Length: 264
Ligand SMILES: [Mg+2]
Picture 1 (spheres, rainbow, N blue to C red):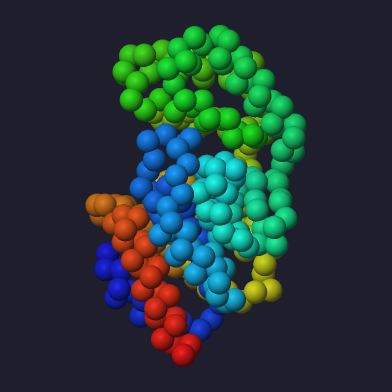
Picture 2 (cartoon, protein in one colour; picture 1 turned 90 degrees about the vertical axis):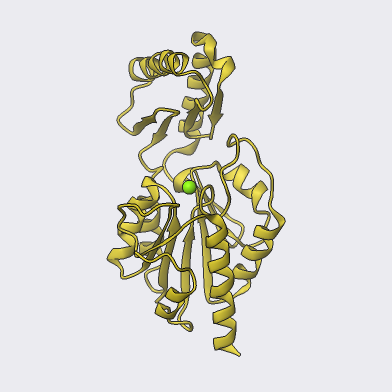
């Protein structure tokens, strides 16, 4: 992998249509304190608006955040936004598209949230993010022993009372998420590529975590370009590396500049 955001622009064919999958947190923007912090960044809005104004560049925001938050962060007409790993999508024509039975899953998650708040009193101390068809529990900044007690209780409730083969439980030290199987960036990328097969686009994917890695494999398989955002060298299937959101934005600016120079 290379880390210089300028040199690898040479690899791009500047004239062909480009589809650009972009993760949000840790990729386009630094991480927020908690995911409910929705502070739009005017510089980023300007940059993405410009990218989206090109008829032959199709940016797609693909994030684990819920769609409503992404729309608040990026109020850009005609921007293709995929929330909760792609189970809810705002299409460029303004239409909404949902994967799976969103309404049924939404009712299920409301019920789960109610039970968690009722049966796990420690929930007052943590942030429960109801994303509609999925639920995420954020345990950052909680003492380790408290965190493991809460995790045990929550996982117990999900496994005993809400077990569903159509759902997957993801967890790490600070985070528990219960989401439909369709809430998966790799599946979303595959679906978008399949649904738009007639467009002879070059595909780029930029992301910063393991969920992005899975999607990058799909991009690599269609000879696309994948870029992993990581401060330090890391084992990755990505073609290139950029260190942080600042470098990603710089690279995107340079990309647009190179495209302009080529067109005019
Ligand atoms: Mg990210």
